[in-house]
Image (cartoon, rainbow, N blue to C red):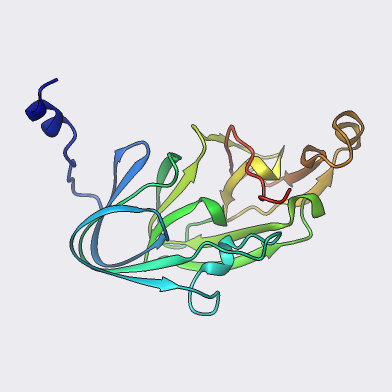
Length: 222
């Protein structure tokens, strides 16, 4: 491949959508005003953009991706101005969802890549679910209208309840469903009491959906 062909085949494809995938692992956001993005995910930008860190749950979104086991969190940045913002997160696959007014989704804090500033959010820590072995779950409830980008290790699988899932492999669920905690004693006996697989999230609302990935995300100290 000559240089001119390489350049032309890998240039950005600027379309009409605010959130547009350049490929499965790279998101192009046409910023006109403001968006929220995971700090450290910016790989490049064009135009006139300002970046403001959010260092506390009170001032921003640090709390929703805080690792409870370590007491550390990954900060969120607010991006304002006009230009193109290019985001990626450790080679993970990116899924872009467009939420209608009143439509909502709850996402694992570590799997939220970006969302438009008009999207409402609420941070929730679900300590009682899935037992102490998982360190609780920290999720972000996002409600439209607006675009949301989430990340998955590999291609996601979307399931319809009733279904039970491994918390470490659960990425998101629809806003009209909510899990309860469950323990599978036979799994405990088979894989050992300390294994996270003995704990599940139990989803029962058949009108909802659950997103899982072919990967188990663990806290660093587990």
